Amino acid sequence: MSAVSPAPPVVSKTDVERRAEILRKALKGLGTKEADIIDVLTTSWTAKRQAIAAAYRAAYKTDLLEDIKSDTSGDFRKVLKALSQAPEVNDAKTLHHAVKGLGTDEDTILEILCTRTNEELNKTSNAYFSMFRATLISDIKKDTSGEFLEVLLALLSGIRDESERTDPIQAKSDAEALIKAGPKKWGTDVKTFTDIFATRNFAQLRETFQEFEKLHGTDIQTAVKNEMSGDLAKSFLVLVQLVQSKEEYFAERLHKAVKGLGTADDNLIRILVSRKEKDLLAIATAFEKVHKKSLAAVIAVSSVVSLLSCCFDESQYNLHCMFNSTGRDIFEL
Image (cartoon, rainbow, N blue to C red; front, side, top):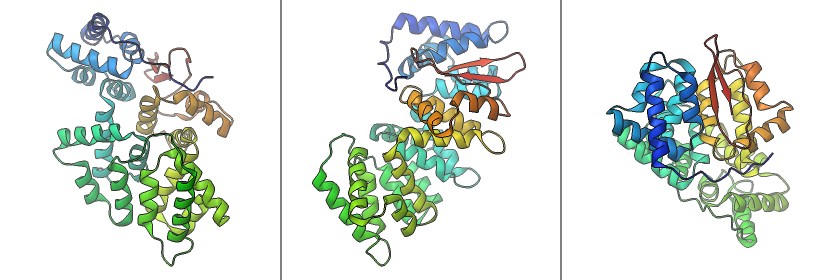
């Protein structure tokens, strides 16, 4: 199974307008035609979905999102909303809920800040301000503090090297700096950890962690656990896991979303939608490798609320949502 997504197709104005018309008839005709909505939104890439939403607004003088809200419900509505909105809008809304909701959702904040590109983070910050008339930075400052806050601000600054270049000399130098800042220091120099973890590309960090273990005899995860605790430790451990395998990180996030008391539908939907054009097949492969069950099977047996099945179409990389006769949502990837 290939883990590399194909290039998105060229957006055709004629096709976009046709799809907007299909959506209008499906939403505002006699009875909501879920199958048509599903087909249009799940077989279109992100850029095309945004073009369809713009064409819908131009033709019918109303927002596609508003019609989706008024004519659908439950998790079906949630998925359609996620597919209809720009990724940065989804992330901005998620982060606002994470910092303004009942208790801070550190896991979700870290997921977004640690896995989005510099450009994506910048777009999310702009979308956040447009929607909430406050900066994401200011709201994070109000809701977190101390060294954990400094790590979040460093991640949000969007200054990570995004190349895949590696420098063995730099890796050794950084490893030595981390050892001096942690195991060999009375009290941990968190700033040194932050500066390195938040700015180096993941390939470079991978080499740095290998050098760290060679020089110190302890892997970087153990060192972080020994030197830090709480949310601060969690932030660095998330980054270590992402450096080691982004796919396994998301596989574990999905596993947590479908296990335990009830299903964390919002987390499940966010990950499936945000990764579907990036590395979802690789995540599914990692999930099966770690948990010895397919992601489809686990979602099918674990989602007691609504998400019943999930399977992968390698040729299309589509996320299909279907609504069965019992009123439960069925997801197909």
